[in-house]
Length: 267
Image (cartoon, rainbow, N blue to C red; front, side, top):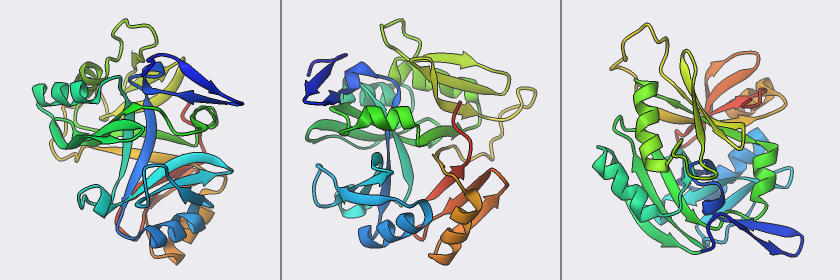
């Protein structure tokens, strides 16, 4: 692999994880029924789908023609619970898995080869699931990044402790050329890649001690034009609305996977 570069293929650049290491590079959903999942997200978010290059048990969701997310049948990923999971770009998936174990996290699946790359499903010390991906990124990935159809937020007990954990795993603020930078704000940690906010870590007010009742998890957000219409479509198609405001709603699909729709961009 030629880390840190892109390969030119006609009018399309093929990016690999070495060029954006440490940054979120994809989001994926585990599904009990691919057909039912496509019907739900097509109705709620207006997505279309195509077969992914990973095989028949995988689909790529498209928003206005831009790849926005992956969907994997549970049979292909070890019967995991239905959930949205962010994946971070790494130059070595095996090394990232080893670092996770060494720092008190968990390796749930892998690392295993999924041509054209290598992946692992991990969890941090507080149980929040995340993935790492080593290899080429999805075709039109740079369009995905520019359009920012998704962003992610970690809800956890201690944002600053979590930032240290992920920083050591994913080489944030490591001084390596191209690494992600970390900004410590009053009540959250911001992750920047190429000066763009690509993730947030939140744990509440800094004056309060870490809350042991918080179930740590990564929340995937999708930018939409009409939050209310998405919420109503979710209800009509077997999902539910957990929280709803004027500019944002937390939804749950029929399999139980939770996600957020928002009219705001990450930055």
